[in-house]
Figure 1 (cartoon, one colour):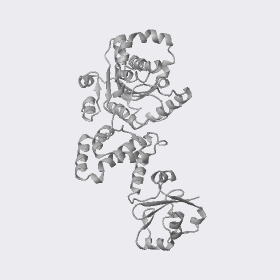
Figure 2 (cartoon, helix red, strand yellow; figure 1 turned 180 degrees about the vertical axis):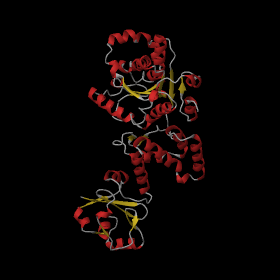
Figure 3 (cartoon, helix red, strand yellow; figure 1 turned 90 degrees about the vertical axis):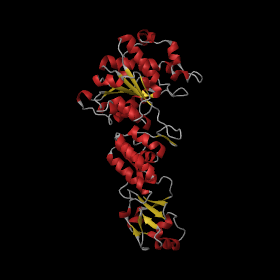
Figure 4 (spheres, one colour; figure 1 turned 135 degrees about the vertical axis):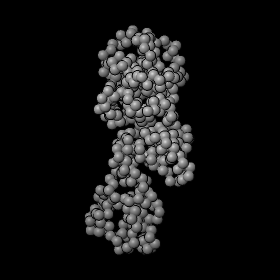
Length: 422
């Protein structure tokens, strides 16, 4: 079986490690491993999936994963990777976000796997028990100002300004590692490359106070070939919460990954074998227009995040714009697919009594006259829910609804219109 560090390296998932001999160390010792997620919003985003998958990969390799939700550190805000001070959230919002993130993270890991069962902890459960003066005396004295100023997350903020609140964040994350080491024998912390300073601070604290070596592994920041941060769209973050970013929107984002980025994305964000991924490299080379690798990425990630049923619907929805069947959708999904097409509203009795196709075409302004509508139909250029209309006397009925209230009209190859019935 491939060791975990070799596996991560082969998938281009290692940015830094604190000990170059981790493969050998982990062959004989598989201690608990943790990754932290601060509740700065009610959902994690696509970029967060990389450390989540990291915990999943470690669990598959026989390690116990610990998910830390930062109910305490979320009150402060990590300055890493930020150019300005965070807007501090209220306590009620933090608590609500903690609950939401815990529920979200529980979907990804196995909590019934014996000694490798996943565990969720909230660092407010221990920080709320510590007096400020005690923390400064027992923990703060082990951190030199010079060393903290030298950390990249602090250095990059000195010009724009950093408050003592954010400056102290490193101490809190370091103490998290110490607490998890003392109480769960956790010896590995995972994080993004911007977490290196915080991770090494915890490693040094444990060395000073416990005389033990623990380890850190960081993942690279994933950017696209164009230099954009992976998981960012024009509209903002691609969220893992389906209420914020619908499964269809996630699927569409992934199916549009460029050919330059797709193999790396398959390595990073799926559990497919490297051999299978390599086969898709050949398909990209020979038939790039088929986008088979992108379809695979979209299917794998959407299934992981939202389940296979949602992925199937997103897959079906993705084919709609290319002539795929339009039936069995929800109003919400059809509105997402056709967010920028003309829409017309009619009363439901018009449909119940049988709506003349010529009138329907006029209602959605896809034609300027019944004569034009007849010509389009005779030329085979009119479609109801992507099914060609051949009969000029065709009437639309409730059986033609593609969702609760919508029928999709198409003229030509790509001109779509929505008829809504109230």
